[in-house]
Amino acid sequence: MTTAVDIRDVTKIYSPGSNQAVKALDNVSLTINDNEFFTLLGPSGCGKTTLLRLIAGFEQVSGGEIMLFDKEIENLEPNRRPVNTVFQHYALFPHMTVANNVAFGLERLKKPKPEIKATVERVLTLVKMKELGDRRPNQLSGGQQQRVALARALAPSPKVLLLDEPLSALDLKLRQAMREELKQLQRETGITFVFVTHDQEEALAMSDRIAVMSNGEIQQIGRPTDIYEHPVNRFVADFIGDTNFLDGEIVDLNDDLVTCRIGAQSLFETENSGHHKVGDQVTLFLRPEKIMLSVVDEANDSGKRPGKVKNLVYLGNQAAYTVDMGDGIELTAQARPREDGELPFAIGDPIAVSFSARALKVLAQ
Ligand SMILES: Nc1ncnc2c1ncn2[C@@H]1O[C@H](COP(=O)(O)OP(=O)(O)OP(=O)(O)O)[C@@H](O)[C@H]1O
Ligand SMILES: [Mg+2]
Image (cartoon, rainbow, N blue to C red; front, top):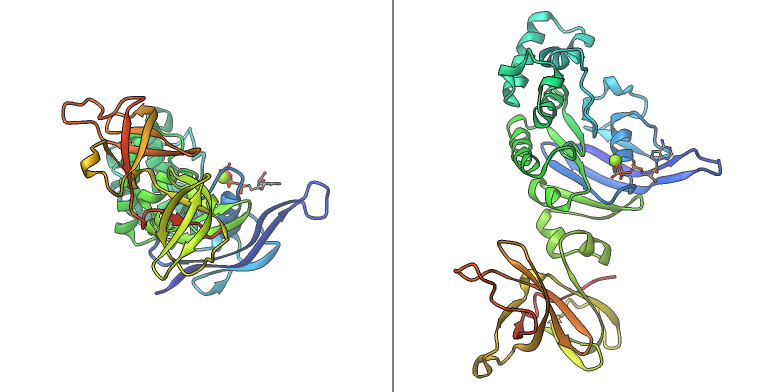
């Protein structure tokens, strides 16, 4: 596997030495493979744009190094790097037609005219905008403008495309449609995509791998399922998806199972990962969709726990239930509406709650 972008121990400090110094990146290391759809995910201010700007060459690293296809690029001007960027605010030139916007970069590279014409046509076709080449940006919808910005960035055939929250200006429906299109574009072109977002759903839906960042540090790197199912810490578990956190103490364990006490006296079993001992204070997490809710039926409720519906939020295709488990424990769970569309439980209903030991996980930290 070829490495497209190799980020080694990169630190970035803005205004170093002054009282306004900001450490935007702290010892960040990651490798992005060629032909990969790689996402940088994290909350506002965590350093995502900074990392993109370093790869693009608009900023210099304060420490560490960045290699592109095994070449040190520290001294390479931005326009000499095999990289192009789609910015968060995809400023198109308002006075130019769509086609001229796309041609602009190629003209600056002094490409021959016939080649420019062919490339513009090819990339506009790729983003499904071929028919609108003569329009100006203000005659386009937001989604169409976004496609032009993409075409413009693709035109010089970069080996790596950096995309800084390119969908954030679009409404939900369009954003979802563009997700598919971007993903398909990446597959078709084979270009390495480094995609920045603070939207976890977008990251899960599109990426081959995700790096979760907070405060200038990488928290976890992995495939979407790794990140969702096996978050390494509370930050990642909390940032990705909805989660129940339960604080407890390990009171017993054997080869297979760990028993935790939560609240004053409630015992829960989870799989033994081999990293814990009796007496450890731990945080457990449990995804809402892993919890089964059912109507109380004493004859068949062995292994289930009693609970009571405290609150519910109707979401159309499902409802989110807050369940009071007693002993100060509350869980959020999900249930689908019945076939007639009505919800299976109401506030105040007693219900039976179950989940497997496998679904309940001990967080490493
Ligand atoms: N030119 C700059 N000078 C000083 N500090 C900066 C500069 N650019 C960014 N920062 C600071 O560096 C940190 C990281 O900023 P960055 O723009 O990389 O975050 P981000 O993850 O892209 O956030 P967002 O999701 O809001 O775009 C922030 O604390 C920000 O205030
Ligand atoms: Mg940003």
